[in-house]
Length: 439
Image 1 (spheres, rainbow, N blue to C red):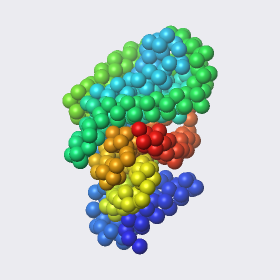
Image 2 (image 1 turned 180 degrees about the vertical axis):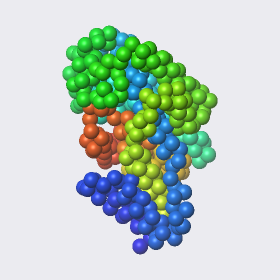
Image 3 (image 1 turned 90 degrees about the vertical axis):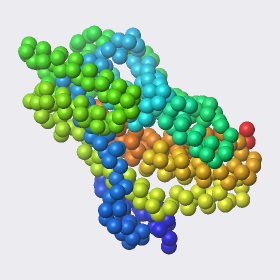
């Protein structure tokens, strides 16, 4: 049996075990990476560990550390009040505002994980306080990021368009962008209907009503007293300190966004630097903030990203892609490639996958009968809508910043179930809409 098959079977095994048993899938992925790497690919242990995405791990740690501090000093609460006031207290508009803001950030060039890292914790803070379904809110952020992610000036869009040009395919910038935006809007609308959006339309809140907010925090199960704000009212001196901390934290948020998005610096480094500065300014108040970093999520993503590199080293994606290209029916080969993009991207970087999956599709396009622009759009969308997966950067960020109203194992299973549905159904529907009709 070739290494590509060994890697695929090991992936299936760790996924089944991690689903059936309460074992962190990151730990299972490390075991699989070690065994497959050592005994099937003859890699050294150093080479196996080379697949760990240090950028992703640092992003998770830095962002969750910064927002732990923001929760401690009540800044998240302050942001929630301000945003609710901006939409006139209409709770049903809040998820759509988050979708639009995240889509705008990625459309103008922000990396999808950076946009999700900035907006996700704020959006999930709303979900916890105003009884919005956390899964719906988190997925709105991810779908928003992917919806704007293929604009001609975005990172995904630039990569896709340059790969098409390098492979002598006709330019289809707006086709890819609008296809991604439309699909993600549809996904968001479905989530809105299925997870209580219609009930939210009748709900309005007064962001200036102290009693309402305190009741929301209390009923939501937030650990307010331990974090020094909300129902556990501070003394006059402490109140002044909280107000000063909130201003500094808001300045830190703006600074992180500017440095990461405008100056194109790693958001993990920027976020953890901001968190450390805030912690130095109030060391006693934030001494336990580091414990609130989502360490189980860090293990999950570190292990899975390591195994994703092993999967690539084994040549599994190319193996399946070449097999699809060799099928007699062009349309069926296109469907297989859409699924390859979806399944692999659910566990690995979409940014790294796009330059690989599009050239594999060139033989199918060359055989005629398929629009290059629509086929590439189908591949691009299939490879990115699955970023809702808890193993991808965006999905992991949502899991890491879950509201206090829901337990992590429950939220993890919800995201995992939704991502499995998207992986199974998404590529098929995208293919049926864009490729099958032969536009």
